[in-house]
Image (cartoon, rainbow, N blue to C red; front, side):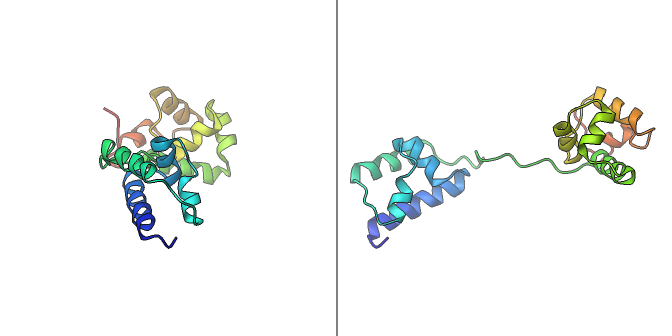
Length: 148
């Protein structure tokens, strides 16, 4: 891209997108209903001044809030999820097999292993299925981030 005006425009848009946690395509889709705008510009395409103004107006009307709108940050493993992971490894179980023992879905088991705090009934099922190796108290230690 050799046009300094377009280069500056793209740099402004990229800075905005980084702050919002969105892609340039998403910005263009929201602002001017054209998610390929910045791809075309990066390939040497042109842009009308009114299109640039619409994008800038959108950015002004929707400033970054400090809260990113992209993917949420995954939960941090807690004492219960760490104990559960260790138990699963000692038993040679993957998420699917452990999920069957607990009576929950494989995807929910993966979420719990990755740090999601399970509900009371699930905590009870895990305690029972592990023979007390992952007791309810494990989920509520200082590292466990108990709900409340």
